[in-house]
Length: 186
Image (cartoon, rainbow, N blue to C red; front, side):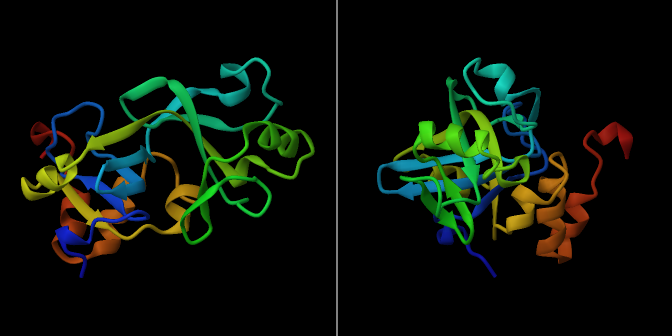
């Protein structure tokens, strides 16, 4: 069983079901960096209606959807991928999932078809917490901590991650996962 104090890089944060913040309502956030100075993560289940090659004019053509990573610095693009052995400077977040790396090399690898849409996910902006902020939010019950599974990022339907992760936790979490989004739908 995961405890609130087990917050670490590579875990996911699941918004409590009645969180009102529209940025995080019923979302799953992969923590990519967690330390004494704060935390950084990306919302896994909020696709935008655009592709990365439409967003960045000089980007090679790739059928890769862009996701809303969070409300911080929405003028930046980030990426999670499976090709840490090919993308110099990338950082392993959890088993088989890497963050960032050399952007020019990434574009070359995509042009060469060495990175396919199934290997990468792009994000506009990120989710960030200052020192102590995430711990405080955990204490108030804003987040449910869970294990990250590769398929949440590269196998699940993009808008079902929150529900799937709660169901995987079992017991009362599985019941929460199936609660209607609005009480009037009960």
